[in-house]
Length: 81
Image 1: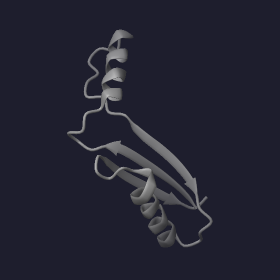
Image 2: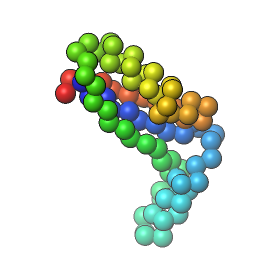
Image 3: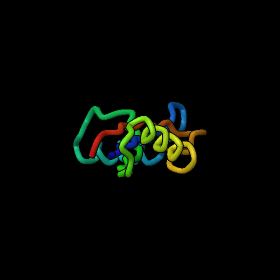
């Protein structure tokens, strides 16, 4: 199984890296770009045959290590490799 995990800052949490990207895009001539938010993308391969077991493991990974659930949201997709 392969999991694709998306982690983003929650709304209302300041995103200085997103602001820096937004400013750089403006300097490069990409006008009209606003509210840039950055995040993380993580791929994980799991030696599981049951999708529900794999989803439970990925959810636990996110809660325990990959995402700071105080300031970050996460979502994921699990698919057969």
